[in-house]
Length: 226
DNA sequence: CCCTGATCATGA
DNA sequence: TCATGATCAGGG
Image (cartoon, rainbow, N blue to C red; front, top):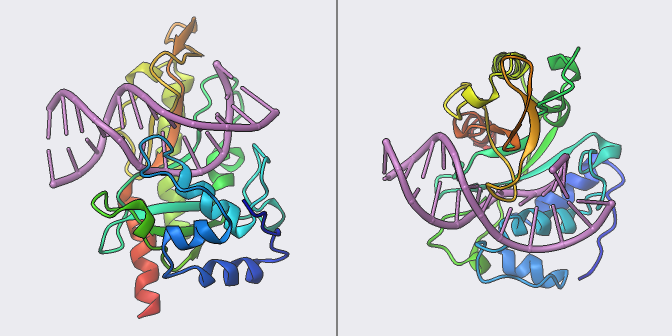
């Protein structure tokens, strides 16, 4: 595949993102010669990789954001015909140990969500992957109200982890931010602590944004364009 | 295993 | 029908 250059600044990134709105995944994949799978069953992160490659995200940087020099995190989000999210959005791995002194302000969740470039992509499973189209990009920063909502959920969930109640956490908790398993399979285990402070092995977890939250983000911006 | 990118698919 | 819990691929 072809390698894209890294955008120098925010407006260059936005111009590049806006330039692919309306195009199909096949058209974009062809332009950079990225092989396209028949569907996403075996390559669930393919759309994210495609957009990442096309926009020139810093490949290989791990704990960093996609556009570290711009302080921007890239997220593709599958949407239905109304432009509303079809899936929750993974944010970051949930830390199950070494949480002494961790606050919302110093959390990975706040860091990652400080500034996000959302790329909506048609995701209805009845649409062939090749014909799904890319939507208008949304550069988002949490409002004070949104950040407070996230902070409250984060605090509630982190309190449970610190108290050794990881096994009691359910995806139903949290209004906008939830914790769910995040692993290669059910056999993957990582260390945590139980309520007696004893080490246990448990499924790795991740923080996800619930659809109700990302739906607000997407629809708020749709209004702005009208 | 940990983390990146996420969506799949089954039970309620 | 739909969200939760499970899972897929790849690099380090």
